[in-house]
Length: 612
Image (cartoon, rainbow, N blue to C red; front, side, top):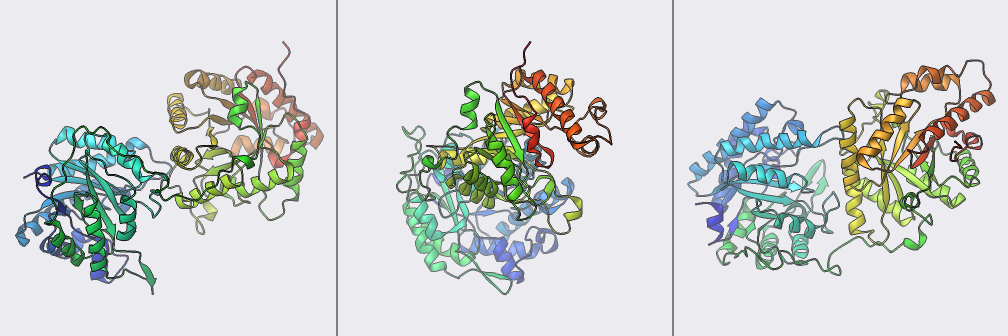
């Protein structure tokens, strides 16, 4: 019998936690249960048997974290591990003499800024191919924070095995959002629109009590089965141990409410044991099957905004830092002028405030942009520095946010903080790596890249800031060898909501021609980067030590070791003016990176249409 046929007559009970239950048996919170498939297979087999005898009609293979990046194993080792997971689950089913379905369990593959989407998809397909070769009943994706891969992966499964039951589960917080900031009802709506997905639901993240509150706030999709697997509760750290309350009776009472809401598949996640599943199994026979509607008039009822838990954000459009966003200036067809200042390394902010006040006196400067600890060297936070500069100068500001230093939890907090303080313009970048001499003390987060961060802000704009959203841009290095890859990445950023690009410094005619080509191919708004080199030493340093910035010899040769500061600044300004003239018909604006915050250069640079 297939799961689809079973659900037409019954509701379905799954197993409970594997990882926390294994850790409890081993008395070791850091034990990796996937490794036990090789090292202690009998423990895993016994856990499966316990859940089956408790009443589970569907058990998951012990493979949640079985992927190459998480376990640091080869492809061959991964295939062997996945097959062992399937074999042990099958052995448990036979030994327990219990008739149950088997699901291949897939958790999120860790992603980092350097990872390409196609590579991640290929890794998921490696896992899927093994599960399909093992003739399992279902493939379950659990504890995901978004659905970006599920369209392609669910199609891939159904094309190879149309009868395999496909389940996708998302991990929510108490407010009904994933860690990527996507709201629960949106995920259900997207899943309901994908014909290849058979069931969708939520697991992990929250307790059974909070899960009940969340699913009662919206009506379920009527053309998909729903699977719910909450945690036992919220653990407490006690002497280096994570302790969950043994609340199986309370949990069972909440799962009754879940079943009353029309959920077809119920199970349990972190902190649960076979006693939790035993309680659910006693309930399940009292419930008739959920009947799906093939073509409901309304697949998913929208959430009532008054019921949906959400962050308490005021409408703060009235305190917006600037009268116009950068995108509004670009729409006017004027050249937008941005000047970058580097926040100080220490708590002395007098000089940067003086620089900002100087820029505020120049009418042609539209925005001050603040770097986010460039080169991986800690500086004053770009958002906090931006807020102070605005309060002192009333200039429009645009902090950089990079992916190097913050996970999504910290990034979301920073973005909310920027918003309530009136910031509306952002530059979202992946960020420079942590310098090698600092790696013994700190490491880059890089849990995501700039494109994923843009998608995250785009989602926040929809959910929280729809009346007055952020506008944001991305970084553009036009000097890469493969122009098609540059274009592809630009288009991905634009699809993720990027409204403009700020480029690396341009010095050569070849760089100018490349910018023209990129504009023609993408239609992007581009602020061309200009870095006036303020000395011979500065010119040699940028040329020889900054990857991605191409400084021609003829530029360096215009400087010499013995020139005065004034002479060097004059050369720098003349070079900038020449570049402005060449770029005028191409650029949508100019982005000035001033070495050492040398704002005096802006008095010498002429930002005006060339006379020809």
